[in-house]
Structure formats: C-alpha cells, structure tokens
Length: 166
Length: 166
Image 1: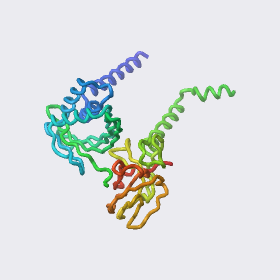
Image 2: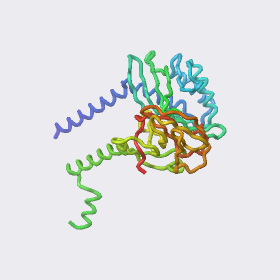
Image 3: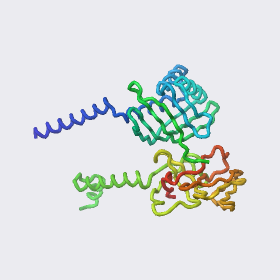
Image 4: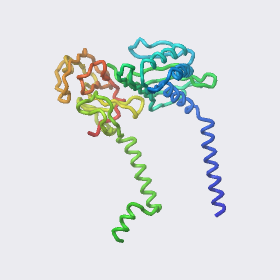
C-alpha cells in the first residue's frame, strides 16, 4: 500500500516536471504561435480603449515586425516593403478609424524551411465596426515568414493567398 | 430488477471496466466523426441567402466527393488554411467552361443557365472567363448585394472540404 502511494507521488512529480519544462522552455513552434497571439491581441480594439493604450499598442505592434517587412497582396496597391515604423503608423491610423476591432487567427500550420526561419499558413479573420458604424468582416488565408532575430521571432513577410480568383 | 433500480442504473451506472470501454469508444467515435467526417459549422453572413440564412447551423459532409466530382448547382464548403473557417458557395461552372454573368443571368459557354435558387433580383455583370484545370467557379446565391462586396470566383478543387448535409 505504501509502495503504491509513493509510486503515485513519483508519477505526479514526473507529470508536474514535464508540465513545468514545457511551460518554461516552450518549443520553437509555440514561440512562433505566441507572436500571432500577441499580434491578435494588440491589433484588436475594444470600445473602451483610451489614447494611452492606443499609443502603446501602436508601438507594441511595430515590435513584432522585422526592420523591413514585405507585404504581398494580389491585385492591390498595398503590396510593398514597409519599415517597422511605417507599420506602427499605418496600424495606428487604421485602428483610429474603427471603434471596435477583433483579429483572430485559425488553423496555424508552422513549418521551419530553414534554420531560424518559420513559415506559417493560417486563416485570419478581421471583424469590427468603423467609427461611422459600418461593419467589417474580412477573412483571408495568409502565408507568413518569420525570422528569428536576437532570440525573437519577427514577421518579415506576409502574403495574402488568393482562395477565390475572380 | 425493478424499474426504479433500472432507472437508477441508467443514470448512475456502476463504473466497471466494460462501462469505461463503452464510454471511451463512444467518445472516440464522436470525436472522429464530428472532427473529420461530419464537421459542424455555423453560417455567418448573407451571401447564400435565401438558401442558407445567417446564424444557421449545419454539418459539412466530407465524403461527398470521395467517388464523384462536383457538379453544377452543388453547394460546397471551400476551405481557407484549414477547416475552422470555410466559405459556403454554389458551383456555377466546371473546369474548362467559360462563365459569364449578363445582367444577373448566368451564361456557360454562351448558353443561358436557369438558376432557381437565385431568388433576389440581380444586375451583376461579369465578363467571360475560362475556368482553369482542376478548378470550379463558385458564387453565392444572394446576388442582390453589390458584386464588389461578394466573395466569389475560381477555387481549386483541392480546397473543397465537402457539402452541407441539408
């Protein structure tokens, strides 16, 4: 009986150890996915957001991107290379035009084609309401490239994949 | 065994190994069936009105095209990066066909096609375009909305997840 008790305690401690190890030392895939979680949280906006939070979010969003990030959107003049500062400014300007915004990522598939490079395919859904009360609901498939720079995974390329070609 | 005991046994069964095996197999079967074969989804948006309403619930039957090919007028679920977000659309043209819309009326290879499921008046115009190999052309049933607000076009057959159950 005593032996069973000790075995149970040992098994529990092993499980606890594994959980702590996974939490403290997450895999590279989890680190990459965390960047998307952060981007989703920082882009999203609630109706109660004040100016200070908005400024902080602008800076936070920029910190997730490489010094130069390439955006590829089929048949759109938006395509091009943007600096971190430009992304922050555009994000701030876009967020100021909406009263509420929600960005969610689904079905993230992470692969590592090269060392310190992650390629992520995912579905992004952006819903919100403009300050004029107009509703927005956009869903796109994205292919993102992230590079590991100074132990941080940063977005270096975002491509919009055309699911339906007119 | 009296009725009272039977009822009690039904709602509060004895935790035997047989019972645990039965519960596990039911849970596993349900997970596989509803996770991979018959995926539940909720409809958001009005692009398939009046056939499918915003807020409706349905299931995506994935085995529909296991031994057959999609046909014109079929309603299909098109995936983005995964199965979490899909587009529900109507197949209007198949590979190699030339699709065109003239004042809301569908023309395939220059021939007018009846679409009884399009109930709202439409004045859409779409110049003729050929559907590529291994692709289908999909559109929603609600063509009373502005053409620019409607997500439609050519999709690869590999993106078809299945069909709605009803």
